[in-house]
Image 1 (cartoon, rainbow, N blue to C red):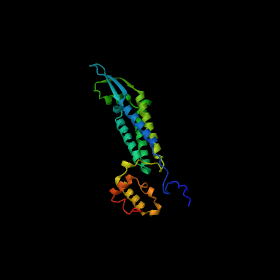
Image 2: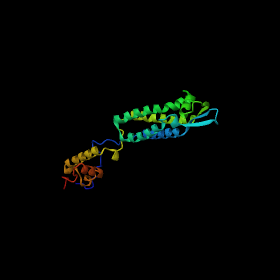
Image 3: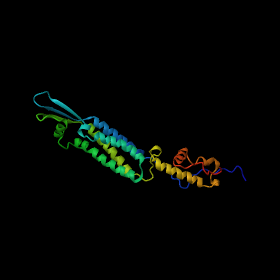
Image 4: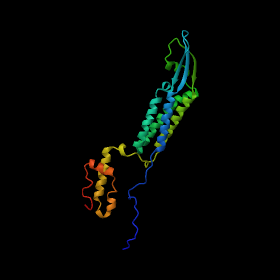
Length: 234
């Protein structure tokens, strides 16, 4: 026999699939959307000047959270959606994308109405400012930038929702601590059982301990399976 014969290159197992990509793009869009909506909710959208004839004119500055009460909660929901994107896959992730797109449409309504001048701006501002009955609205001004910023956030969230809804099945999800421990341990036990069922000839000594990770071995122990039992060559 020729001792200089090169060793066969390690190949992926027949059942192995190519590495899956994580949904980084939608997650970044959701982060941008959440930041934009939150920042917009802290800015002044409408300034109202009123007087009642008895005191000095009164000025009320209404920020985005006051003008549209759901703006801040929507930003928090989008932050939570980032974790949900990495924790799901398949049809569940696509459903999540549809929900995010719908929330984005809701988030766009107040900014769009303010930018286009739709709705009764003075009446709504007076109601939100809780003016007394005798007060008279003297001036109402709106700021375009916070409204446009909310629209940018809504568009980013909508784009993330569309990408998630159209994402292929092969896209990966995060593993590790985000996995359900019950299913992870069951899968580890199955891997150990499959490893132990292989004949000793098919498991080189150098690869016997490399085929299963330390995490899999510990999960198998937690599931009640002894990875050292009936090992080839023992």
